[in-house]
Image 1 (cartoon, rainbow, N blue to C red):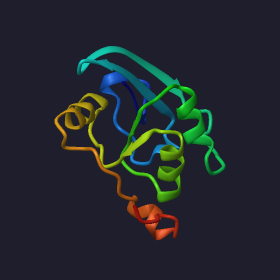
Image 2: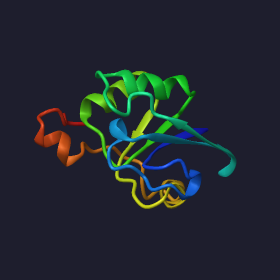
Image 3: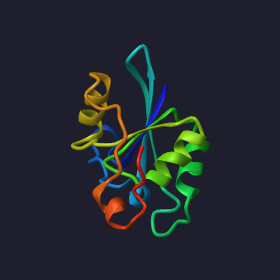
Image 4: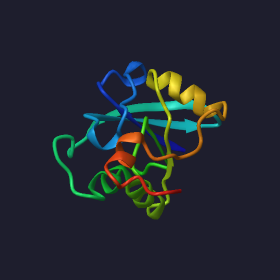
Length: 126
């Protein structure tokens, strides 16, 4: 399984999770096998400064990701991820390592639109 985490820095497992996936400067990619970390890779978000709807989910999809772990995202973005067969998971915080541990313990796993997206009218219901 490959998990992408939206991050504020390129510090790998110690990077802080970004509050919103679309405007994060980096994605930390974690390859898991039997719940063990096999590899960690950091990629720059090419759409950090500006993006059209669907561009960031398409980029994440191109990285062969199964789960998108982030602080928050709008309903439209979540729908794009689901179309690509990527599970959107929101509510992550702390470092990548902490968020990954929460996800593995089953404390994270669902999707809810972030309050910013709801305020802008594109939160959607899910």
